[in-house]
Image (tube, rainbow, N blue to C red):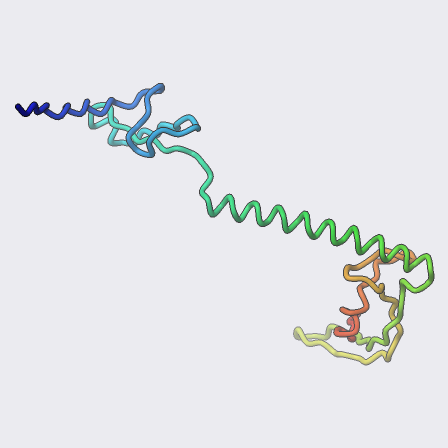
Length: 151
């Protein structure tokens, strides 16, 4: 003897109200935000529920940015400590010969460029610019690659 049971009919989807879950998105930990469109006024009690939860890619990018900023802050703090030790021993600053030019504006949106000569500019032996001798000093590795200054 075979006993068969009829499949239970699905209950109708309840109309959206403040305390009910919608079929869109399933159940979630976050409370739903109910957005009613112009269709809600023309059709009886239809609405759309959107669950606000961060997308995985946005969360991953935010975490990556956070860890990058933390790493840069720690690297700058370490660079600052090493520079201070070098500066106290007298080897924290160096000089690089830099070509200086003067740009003079003329009539008709023209400019005249004058060579002023070569001058020694102080730089810090560090990865990042450091404040020493009452001025911000660019790192020597950067100043050796950019040997022209404009006034």
